[in-house]
Length: 279
Image (cartoon, rainbow, N blue to C red):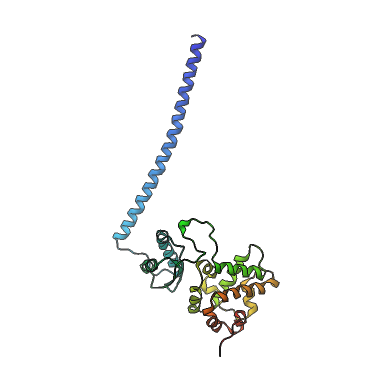
């Protein structure tokens, strides 16, 4: 065999081998892709069958779950509904199997749809709605796609107050949340609801308890105790000014509740609110 023939044979062999290797690699990738698709489909069908058996047997989610589990159940149900209605996240609180709803919706029809859906969640015994009709200027619809929506005017006011009171750059939100959540825990449930109805969603979020309600700060009775509990990680000399500034901003945002809040605060904490009770 001459040299040209030998080179041709070797070249053809190399090409043939390359094609075989390529087909093997592609074949393996394709096989893995098909296997993953089959696995996903099997899991989906298995889940559907499990759900079908669950419904046919007449079983229902346990209605005796604790409030924490029930709150998670309500939030999971609301997620798809919020997406369909294109509204900001609804804030959910559950106390004694009563669901409290706070949030902003665009119409009465949306509010009614949310309330009706929550009532149907197993375990819910009552629904109290504080849904606000109409979006605040700082609220954005999920479809508008802002990863960092501008804060509402009310939240901006509180964060500015925290900064002006002495909160370090970047810590304004955490300081405001700690102060507001500690303060909200002092209020009886009825008055706390009234205060929250006047606040936009992003500010209401800062009033959520940082610990379970039963382990909160309802025992606080003195101003120095409150200041320490609200800002334990802030320099001692800066705590009081931040607390007074944030609480002052909150007071200005809820003029309708000023006197009522003062009336329900422990006597030694009323100076924090700086509003006398009419005699």
